Image (cartoon, rainbow, N blue to C red; front, side, top):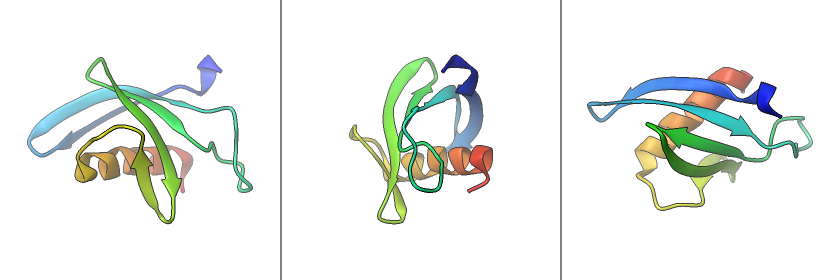
Length: 79
């Protein structure tokens, strides 16, 4: 649902990122979305999910940047 989309903005490795996150409608046992579609600087970054105690993505992306996006999701959902 469009109302679930939220904006993010952060710096990583001397670069500023701005974008949005669209949580999936499907949720886990804790009631949080199982994945998140992420767009950064007007480019699709991929789909993030939290698996085995770490953030993972369906695209090849720098691990530190994936972790930074994950932290933004954690802030929003207070995980």
